[in-house]
Image 1: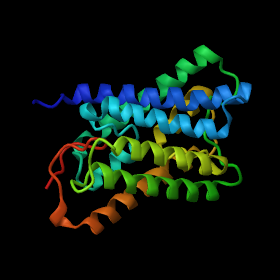
Image 2 (image 1 turned 90 degrees about the vertical axis):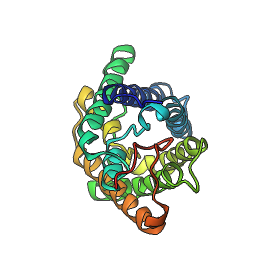
Image 3 (image 1 turned 180 degrees about the vertical axis):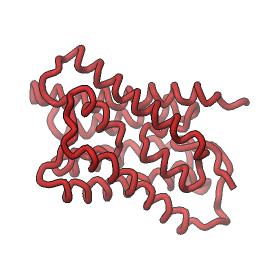
Image 4 (image 1 turned 60 degrees about the vertical axis):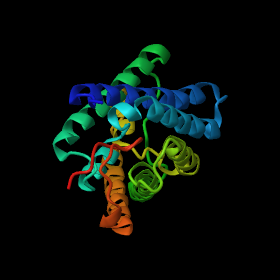
Length: 235
């Protein structure tokens, strides 16, 4: 079966990231207004929507849904570096469109779920680096390794996102995703410490991908499309 064109894969990334940001940050906004979702509920919404979007778009685009994941896959040779800019632009556009839709539906008051450090940028940077490192390590394990890859990858990744959002959210917002932070920042105009959420996830994901590649070893390299994370590995 012929794989989708780059344009179609980018559209899938746009839709998947739109769904992630619309539901995830939408839960934040609704909880701030009503208090009925709770912090635990917000974490679960993020995990569930990530799971759903991976199942919906994983077979089309790899369901990166995150520039940090795309960049890390490129560095780990599970994704063509030439396609990184297009994927990242699609993800950022999807996130911005989702935040714009939320602003239209729920109003522009507040920060639209923007991620901000609870204490200082240094602590938030360390938290975002660590959370994304763990997330990317899980992604590498379940989405690129033939010994472990399968349809359960979406569940494992979604569960990791939910877990980390629940315990890391109060410290840094638990973004783990530059696109997730970009959408609310752009539409709400909240750019305070955005550099934390643009750099820490990328660094954490790249470190995790490199470590997993080393642990796995070349003899287990794969040449297949990952269910939740990327195009063919390049050798």
